[in-house]
Length: 120
Image 1 (cartoon, rainbow, N blue to C red):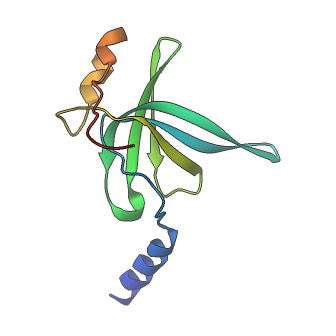
Image 2: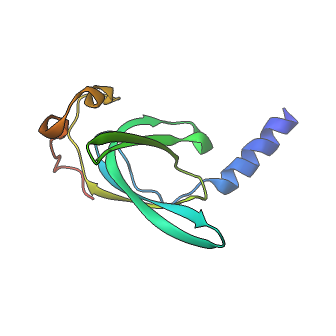
C-alpha cells in the first residue's frame, strides 16, 4: 500500500491542469514537440478526436486526419511532456463514444456535424 501511495503522489505532480475539455468528435490541434538533432520545435497535428481513454495520468486521445488521401491516426498521451498544448478548433455533435466507423468512410462522409452549445 505504501508503494502505491508513492506512485500516486508522483503521478499527481505530473498531471497537467491547463488542458481544455475535450470530447469525442471535436476537431483539435495538438502541438507536438519534435526533436531534430539538437533543435526542438513544435509541430501541429490537426484532426478529429475519434476515441478517448481516461485513466488519470494515462489519459489518451486518438486523433484522425486525412493526409494526401490516406487516413492517419495518432494516439496522444495528454499529460506527456511531448504534448505542448491542445487547441479546440470546433466542437463535434456525435452520438457515440468511439468514432471508429469514420475509418471506413471517405471524403465528405467523414465530416462530423458541428455542435454550438458548448463554448470553445
